[in-house]
Length: 374
Length: 246
Ligand SMILES: Nc1ncnc2c1ncn2[C@@H]1O[C@H](COP(=O)(O)OP(=O)(O)O)[C@@H](O)[C@H]1O
Ligand SMILES: [Mg+2]
Image (tube, rainbow over all chains, first blue to last red):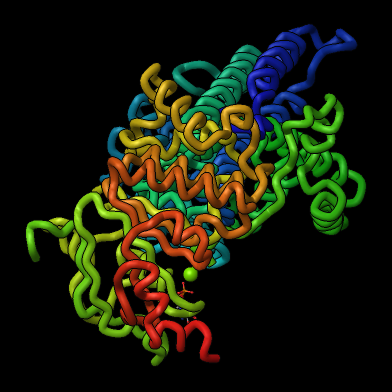
């Protein structure tokens, strides 16, 4: 429906994601002697990349389509991760180091006698799912409501999103906060009774992650492709003008912001299950900034670009840190500068030059409408 | 406020950093009326529209639309009440198609949540087709609005204004950047619109104002200098002084 239609390929990307994860999952179940067997190491990496792709998709929704440059989205990712991590820790039960059936190891270590109230119910998977959705959505809702109705935007909004994730990081580092402090949550054994270290569970989880990422892509495409999407773009480009049509841009932004936080949170949960650990480092401000770079590299406002950017940049990171660990940050910085300078529309921008351009699809000159937000 | 008044500003003042942009301005508009507002640059014409539409709060004075006190409401609330505005500098949503610009403007759904699931109805489609015809942009419907000419953007914005079905239209310098022919077409269009809606139109172009053939209010330094028929006000020595005496 929107003229740019730069996100039209999202369904193609969704199909490719499902196919690729399917192939990897099957490949991982081949005997170790097979030359095309996919190793557990690759499976963990792939799971991690898919989780990051969810985070990137979430960032693209708000940055690409609503113009909100979030530098704190890793907070929602990490909260989703912790919600799932709580359940996985409880599943360990009496198999922990201290053999305590009721308390996770780190609580025993801190000589806690009983579970804090906010851990109640966390041993039930449905409760974990609910927490994974409700806590990040609630926090995003509160934060967005406060920020958007006071018309905080631009750099100021970016800075307070950094502050949000930083504050959460400090809180989660505290032992007394009740989430394992420094070490976070780890040593998980199984999920819903399935052994997390079994190749079948891992293959299943990777395929499920692929399905969820594909579903998120389609959902995001639906959101930005319809009438709400037109309004979103109108708000992004000329917020003040939409008010004179009778719309409330703060509501528009809040809706996409909360939706985006939920996608990030699901990504965090998938991360924890497949990577096997969540710690306060996931809240680090740099993580949120990296996510923005993935989106910039892939192509802002294209949905598919976010997924492709997240996977390729992280693949690059994996390879690079193996060769020249201390050089990675410079490499990432250089990559970001190069895309900004030479590929303003990211990798998806490259692909868009391939098909013939209809004469009607003239790129509009950028004008600043009267009354546009400063 | 008398029963025969749609919009009334009384003793309205606004100061920006010590500068009185609007100074004890009083003005009233009858239902169904079209009023032309003229006045030199900086007279406060746009600021007056900012006050009516809730963008700027007056320091003192009363602004009433029917029985509603507009100084207590914000832009979306005022827009939903039936006041539409066309900006001096045309502001359309450049990345959206002409058609989607009109669809967004259509009176009706304003809740983002409802829009998430809304499909364009046959009725809405017919409305848009009608608007496209009125503003003569039928062939441009699938184009991105950013690619339109300046004059076409002005027309698109008028179309969006009509889509809102407001009772009162505030139109700020609609013919700026238009050819003579387009200017006269716009005057015709506004007269046609005025058959069912009230209009306040700000314009410099005297040929255009003459073509509208309505009561004229001259604004100067934030207040009303003269009011009446165009020939009458343009012979007013104070008006001549303001326009020519510098
Ligand atoms: N937001 C603002 N802040 C400061 N000064 C303003 C603002 N808006 C308008 N003005 C000043 O108020 C005066 C009236 O402006 P305006 O209403 O745009 O005039 P007109 O539309 O009649 O040309 C001008 O001198 C302008 O500089
Ligand atoms: Mg003006």
